Length: 341
Image (cartoon, rainbow, N blue to C red; front, side, top):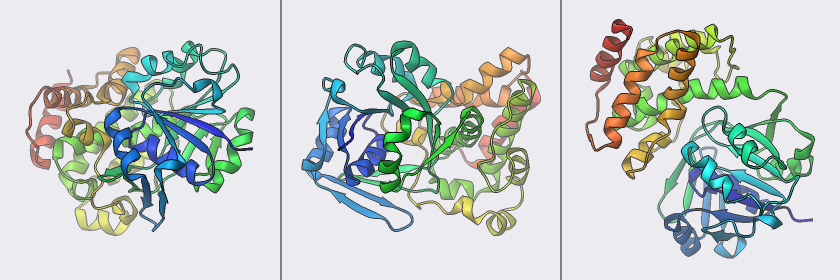
């Protein structure tokens, strides 16, 4: 029997994951903004990845909608909207989606599944994490630009869909407790504002020692707060998070030789936050650095580095078009760290 999948949030991640499921045989409906829906309706989808994968999906192989009016027919709902839009997006599902439907959050940050569960208490709401970057190219092309898969909170409700994800090349890595993975992904995503402020691609930015020093400062502050809160993030990198935060600061040549995999990303890939600033959209900074600032306030530790990144991103959202060199940004974050405010 064909699985009916509703993707709420037709952005880069939602379209790539939903598109791969459609290639694997699912009946997929994308719910999102007309800008993206019109594009993929006109061109169809082309899904590529850094490993050489290339799938074409004509427009007659999927459905689009600006509202989730057909949510009642869905067997599986994927929520891929920006964190700020979570509550509003799932309220549109209330009273439409069937009780017992599996609703999987594929969003950045920690706690979006809790927001969804409050609105849809009769559904099987599960946390998930997309551990790769997707670049949206013109003409309906969506490209997986980094390594990584899908991590999800395990639940018996996933059983009917495991084969589908496997066939799509997106096997679900199931965890009895996804929180350590979410906190680990958040640590990695603390690079998003640094990349956005740099104006560079991810590969260019991560190859620059000063930008990596910025990330190290940000991650070390976050790790101190997590430690005080007794949160142990999972290991998603070749070395444990605390070691990686230190090794980010080594000279460029040593970093390239030791961690070439970190730089093995699509040459055009940028963080989703960089894309948001380019398109004039509100970013997810409150669900990334903001999570660290909030946790720090809870446990009584100052978080001036993450707070300064929030301030710089908010300024960029409000029209500050400045791009920061690694040295300039590092000076800002070191000054914030020294102030201990």
